[in-house]
Length: 426
Image 1 (spheres, rainbow, N blue to C red):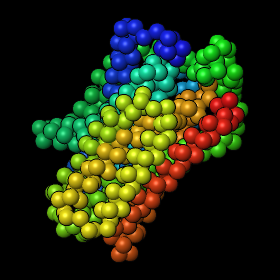
Image 2 (image 1 turned 90 degrees about the vertical axis):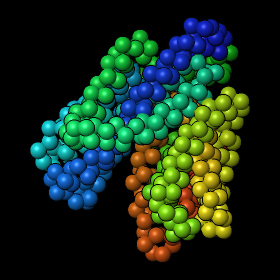
Image 3 (image 1 turned 120 degrees about the vertical axis):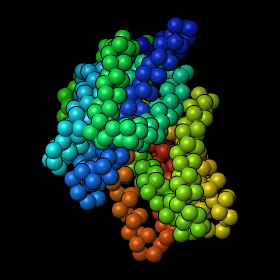
């Protein structure tokens, strides 16, 4: 499906097809987030079974995300050359193998292998998902596609603890691992049944000038070698700006996820249960913000302004929280509002990256820039933990606010680079 067809003819059949694609990709994205938490939800069971300490258990998650980071930066090249559908099936198959290894494990080596294979599977989803969304969904529903994509990711995270805990309670942890694999297998079957929605290689993304003339002014990077594509992309400032944008926003998220509960306790005297509820409200509000942000994408072409304003507001709310001057009940409300503001930025953020993506390199670009999230997620917890150990108890909130502010400026800068029509988009 080309963007031209969606701009000039929006039929009921096209609308149904768009929402079928959005729903299928949302299911796939939710599955990837679901599997990210499979090993962490088994920590206590593995500790009881094998006597592992939390250093060994935490290393399993580190292996998962390190492999994912390396794979995500490179898997986009494959997506752009053979199409997203086979890569998607490969990723889901890796999850199934990983789950089977966990369930059959007889020691630490098998668990590390399972984590590595799971990380390989996890690495392909952003390049695949955004490649399909950008090339299969109509322009007018892109905002809703991006917001649904983010929302289903949050729902996947929310499902894992409930799913795994229920099976562990009814049976044991090995059965829970096999159950996770069975769930992924069901999703793999669904993608096979819906293969017509994902079939074929990516269609080119026409620029505004091409839409008027019907001509192609760009060189299709999918026809270039990997070395030529990488050389063309890595000299583009906008690409590095987008990478840093994701790095800083993930630093902010890691600060909120890892330290909001202890900070609410130390700064406001809120107990752990209520603080945990406040953190949950941040994630739920972020999901609601993603839905609202999907409508804003269609309401304004200046998506970078939406990103910048929402992130500045989220950062400002965190600064207020760090000041410790509001009542505890209001502090919990401000945590949720910060989550909503950060969520609003997500669909506009994805649209902004689309604007600086060259023809034939959608998977590559999204893979490269989204690898910044893994980098930020690995740097944030350690850095902010050092601040708290040094006695700066509000440090994570302040650091998250600063990171949000830097990300907001980066969004404006990336958009300015696109407006100048650098070689990346010309």
